[in-house]
Amino acid sequence: MRLLITGGNGFIGSNFDVGVKISRKDCDLMNLDEVIKVFSDIKPDAIIHTAGKIGGVYGNIKEKGRYCYENVVINANVLEAARIVGVKRVLSLSSSCAYPVDAPIPYKEIDFHNGMPHEAHYGYAYAKRVLDIMSRTYCEQYGVIYNCLVLCNVYGPNDHFGKESGHLVPSLIHKAYVSWKNKTDAFCVWGDGTPMRQFIYVKDVVDICKKALLKFTTPGILNVGDEKEYTVKQLAKIISSNFDNIPFYFDVNMPNGQFRKPMSIELFKQLFSNYKFTSLQEGIKQTIEIYKKEMEK
Image 1 (tube, helix red, strand yellow):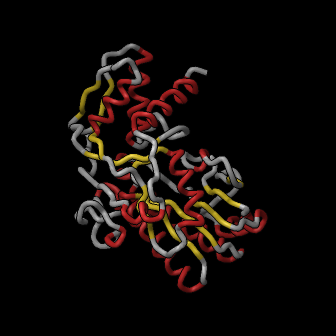
Image 2 (cartoon, rainbow, N blue to C red; image 1 turned 60 degrees about the vertical axis):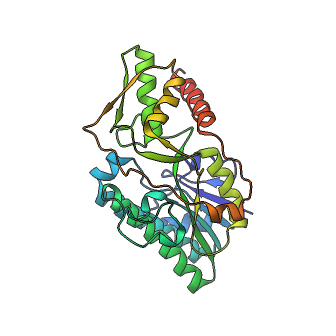
């Protein structure tokens, strides 16, 4: 199978060890004609679509319109170009933040569109919902297999460390590293530390994507992630333990984001019975070891 990975230089895409990886320097995914040409040249049998404009709570709040617009256009161009050049299999990545804020907990796939997402990231969230709708309608009209994996908080090597608009784990790792390296007092954690999150190591995401190309072949979405939840405070402690237990403090003037958004992975377990996720402790340890080496080159 000739596999194409969009977002090849991005966080998740760069962790793939198979396929032809394309990035912004190879193709402007905002330009449909360019996407069609690149896909035609590569002639993939399947596409794993990881590209998009992403960020954490701050980025989603500050640039709601931009996050919505760019992701809608990128996703539409990838699916339409794939259809035009005859690609029958596209697996796209979505996010748990697209679920309705008041959906029954744990979130089940059937509730994905049943209500408003959290106001902090509704622009990005609706773009992800449109991706699901487009994938479903293309399956119905064109007889293809286009669907989406809905991921919880992904972390690991090659993430966007140190960016103000970055995700929770890489932002905290970078802050902890800077405090540890400079021997300052403590690193800052946004909010009060009480929100709870599920996490998944990026290497697990890559492994599941490759398997899902053949195992997950029905229209719609599939929740993917470890069932265990951790508070932000617990996460900060795990990160701190990898930096000689450097202290941290909470800035309660900064946003917490959504308090809880756990996903049900019952459907996932039916397809991937007994799948063993990398523990948060081990994944954080590996991520920090790699990050330290990169920073100290």
